[in-house]
Amino acid sequence: MSEPEGLQGVPEASEKGTAYGQYAGFEDLDAERLRRRRSEKWRAYPPDVLPAFIAEMDYDLAEPVREALRAAIDLGDCGYANPAGLSEAFALFCAERGGWAVETGRVFLVPDVMAGVDALLTLLTSPGDGVVINPPVYPPFFAHIRNAGRRVVEVPVVRDEGRWTLDFPALEAAFSAGARAFLLCSPHNPTGRVFSRDDLLTIAELSTRYGVAVLSDEIHAPLTLPGAEHTPFVSLGDEAGRNAVTLASASKAFNVAGLKCAVLVAGSEAMRRRLSLLPASCQFGAGLLGVVASIAAWRSGGPWLDRLIEQLDRVRGEFGKLLAERLPEAVYTPPEAGYLAWVDCSGLAPGREPGLSPASVFLSRGKVALGDGRDFGAVGEGFVRVTIGTSTRLLTEIADRMAAAVRA
Ligand SMILES: Cc1ncc(COP(=O)(O)O)c(C=O)c1O
Image 1: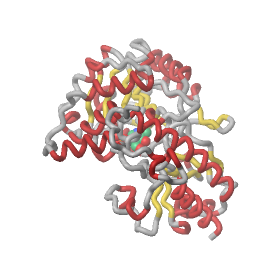
Image 2: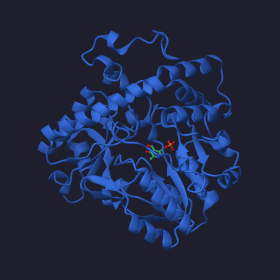
Image 3: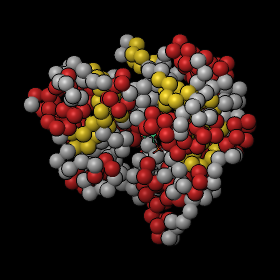
Image 4: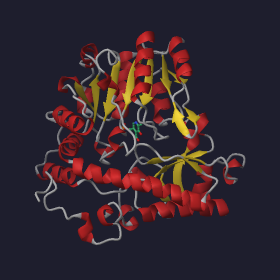
């Protein structure tokens, strides 16, 4: 049988002969080796702390990405970024995986998603304008809006029978009160919710009615898990996308966030014209190795991504079992996309002590670093975010340390 493009010579996972068969590679993680990494995940805390706080997976890079990076290094190809081939590779990836026909002329290189958000806020809104977000939400959303001199308008997501949903009446109230932009997190970090096409159509209708720009951060979309279906906002068509931009990147799905490459996709011809005014720093702030890695990931990373999604599907279930056994008071709804688990720990005694949060207790008593729910907005009080993109063994260690902290 011929091997998939870019994967020639890579041993089949099952040949490694571990108990995990096809998941080998994702399951064969060595904590000591991981601790040699220089990334924020592995350097922010002392070595006795197990880190699961930041959105970085523990898995090794996809082979096509590694090969492309090695080739660039061997060539001394570390100059300024040029986007040649990037929009075509992105369009191929979107067509193959989501049936989304991206117009390559509407794709713009930016250094990363948050730099794209900064550029869009400057381009599409004015100082003092309200920008809507849905807490609990990715913490830098708050800071980037404030740093741009815009106003944060909070419209929290609400729990509906365990599932997090958008509060459309509150969203409409915020739009009608004068908000100028909506920074949508789709899929939603930290809840892992994938919004339905109908949800997005409602947003499009409201944003058109009130003249609100939609900035749709879809960084976690390639990691949509079985049972859910992600709709790229700007795939809804030119009318819905008239005042919209989708922000995308290979960085979360392929674990290359430090390489600095993301794209903006204009939802209409009018928006394309506006994005053509983006400053040159958008291109030159991006990393060439990020462009190289993204092209390789989007062109040849599909088979690896399929196996990763199987792994994440498995670990989201494993984590539920571990919590049920060790911390039955914790409330967890498995994510529909990505590798972040949003866990309600408000029923656990330690986090309720004055001045303490569950995350601070897990860190001090259990030596496990988790995302502190309070950083995701006031509605995150009592929650932790756990990065579960790791092996079953390390996931078990995370849960054991959480349980030990509660017992301590
Ligand atoms: C929803 C969301 N947006 C943006 C980012 C950051 O992306 P970038 O590093 O491309 O700015 C993250 C990182 O975890 C994220 O979860």
